[in-house]
Image (cartoon, rainbow, N blue to C red):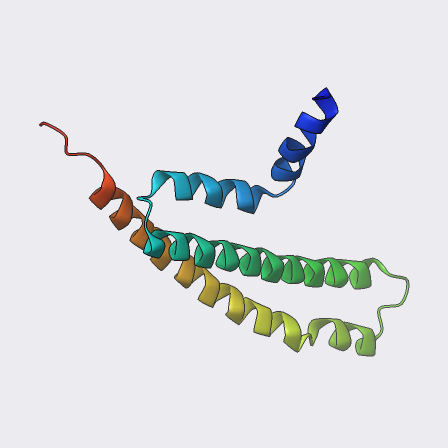
Length: 120
C-alpha cells in the first residue's frame, strides 16, 4: 500500500479534533450501548457549542470592524450592538456547557464502574 494511502485517514482524523476526542473517550468507557449513546450526544454537544462560540466570536469581530471603520454613525453603532442572534447563541452556549458538564460526569461514573478494582 502506498504511504499516501495510509496518511489520508490520519490527516482527516487530525482535521476533526472533536471526533478524535470522542473516539478516545469511547475507548475509555465500557463497551455498552448507553456509553456509545453518551459519546454521540457529547460529540453533538461539542459541535453545537463550538458552532455557537464561533458565532459569538464573529459578533465581536463585527463590533471591532465597525469601531475601526471610517464612519462611526449612531446607526452603525446601534445596528452592530443590537445583534439578537448573538444573545440567542449565548443562551444556547450556556445550555450546551451545562449539558457537557452532565455528560462528562456520566462518563466519569461509567469509567469508574468499568474500571477494574484496585487493591488499596
